[in-house]
Amino acid sequence: MVTLSSYQRIYTWHQLNQDDLYKAPVEPQVTRTVMTQLAELAKHDCAINHTLPEHFILSLRHYREERRAVMETFSDPDNRLLFLSDLYDYLQLIKYTDR
Image (cartoon, rainbow, N blue to C red):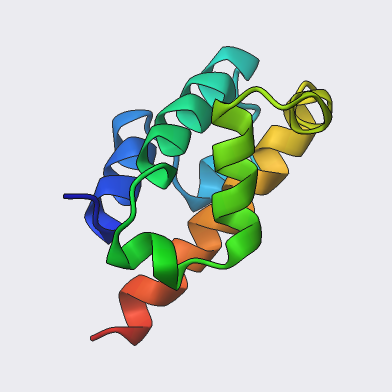
């Protein structure tokens, strides 16, 4: 079952926290791997995926499907990092508002 914690574990596993996403350089291979793993979670029909804004889920699903426009956008490491940092922020909002 995919939950908020499932998404957060991917960031934790790759040692990506707020400081890493905003200040430290992140290896392009790490962002590609994280995108791929998050895309696997986004394919599931579950509560967390219905909670996340549609643009996150669709972008991840299209990334998983290797749709050309999405792959072109995310071929730039800065675009992947921006997406990952935005998603991270949103996951943090969910975590702290659902208490």
